[in-house]
Length: 389
Image (cartoon, rainbow, N blue to C red; front, side):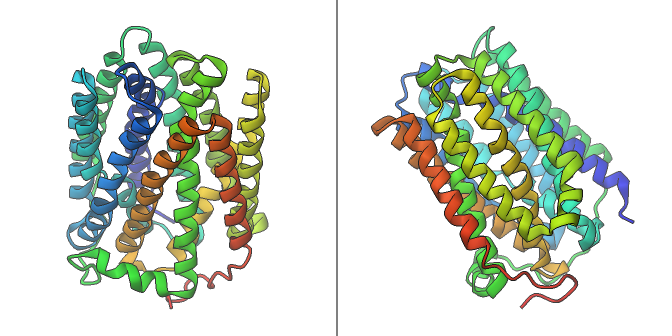
């Protein structure tokens, strides 16, 4: 049985941290638009964070293998506090970019949280444990966007200030209550980027990491164009965007908090991944064609369910493909590819939205998810408790 105390603390930290991030999601695109940014500039604003995290996350993952998870979590949360504080003070587009760069360079908390979970759980329990992290994400996206929508009525700075306070709470919780679980290991190396070619060359792990990259490119298109999509097509402001995203968060939290373990036991992680990808693709394609608000919201339900099922299944499959003493590095590389996807996706999605149409952005993401699902069908995951290739 896993030690429940550190797991509960990790879930609480992720929830508080994502609550702050959820506040920012409906705010940032419309904040940048208010400051005169084009759709492409909005995409570059999201990409600035991700490209910094692209280089920082695998390094932080490797450091967590060598020196422990706790100090890396503390460093990343401190960066989040500083970045949200800068966002609250921003009165120009360049300061928004500075805030996102600071957060990206320190943003290794999710990969480290995943590695932390691998330290305290057995392989058979990881899909459910990762699902609970997804549920913490979901809860953050229930209350965060809703709170951002409410505070956005006051000013653009108010949601960012609230996010600063919440990130500081997460930092305090980590400092006071989170024990170290990782034993120092020589498996981690000074530059985890050197491990990337070797990890990609593994027959199973390499394919899973490629799927991870394409999944996050598509998801980033959906996530970072949502506010502008809803503004252009339906005239939404910060409050409406926040409330709809909160509803999407409810769906994700229900699936990942209560159903993902049952789904995986019944149909396997691979089938959960394929089915989730197909469902998400169908939801995004339908949303792209929606011309009324009720139809649009209804289309978001299968998209949210599909993402809630496929993401923890994919993370668990990646975890099973790596050895125990390399989990920080494996999850760090996975997070780096996620950051690469979050770099490409916003530029692609917002560029398509500005040059073609908001519907074209969602349709292109749906097409990629469908192709990824077909690729995932060819996977032959290794048996659990078998060393990686």
